[in-house]
Length: 121
Length: 262
Image (cartoon, rainbow over all chains, first blue to last red; front, side):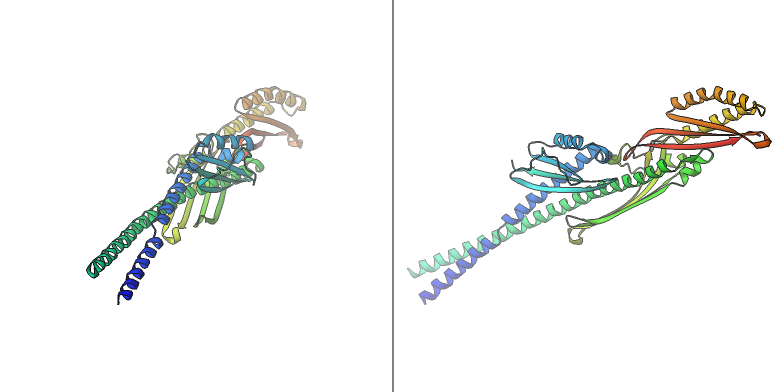
């Protein structure tokens, strides 16, 4: 009888501990943080495109476009612009990025992809 | 001893149950937070896509119009009809980060009076080719964008009309062309069928016409000829607006006009 009691109690304890591990709130919290970081990156890309304008990205030289991306970058945000498949060589992707995103633009005579990374602080 | 063991077991059961319930509650809260953050991200991404799609289709339209302008000279007498005949369309569809999108845009040239009252829809990212440009070529563009993301739960649909422009000068070209043709008609009419006199009158009037055109940003060339026994002189003028800055770089726009003396 005593053996059964111990077995039932231990089994229940094991079940509860397993449930605590399985329904961990850590995963959704990380998903929320990543979604917020992605939103921040989208806002940064939007601000950059509004600042330079699409005509600039359509006609400017690779050097001018890369300079503008460099100016828009900071300690936590890194922007790169890929023109016709060639990115700015001077831009280095952060070693540990919290999030990354990109936006493709089909402009007259030119395909542009704006890439952005949010570095961990 | 047995009672203590039962009490300890019950206490452990209650504690573990409370822990599981608390964990599940926290998990649900975090799940809701993640879901809200994901929805906000999808909505933000859809707005970014909408803006970039409308901007890029507008530029594609303007590039088509620029191609038409640089390859199709306008007739001096029918510049309003020439502008009204301009039309272009562009569409794009695809998928971006789980968001399916379709964007369509079409534009037509329209009289200035209509465009001055055109609805807003200011497209800042296409500046300086968005909005109404006094004296320039203005187009009315109707755009529609439809996006569906978040597994169908987050959608965006927008239709708007906005003004686009290219900085050619149709009004100036029209008045300059009419003025040049009038001056040539007057000069050649006085030559009384004499080719030498006609050439002298033509050579006399040309520097002023070239200077006037140059001052307004145009390059002017002209010519004339005597038309058989009827003693009528025919003349023509070509105006080229050089290096107009379009969406894909500089281009030239040509206007042709001709006439004959009675």
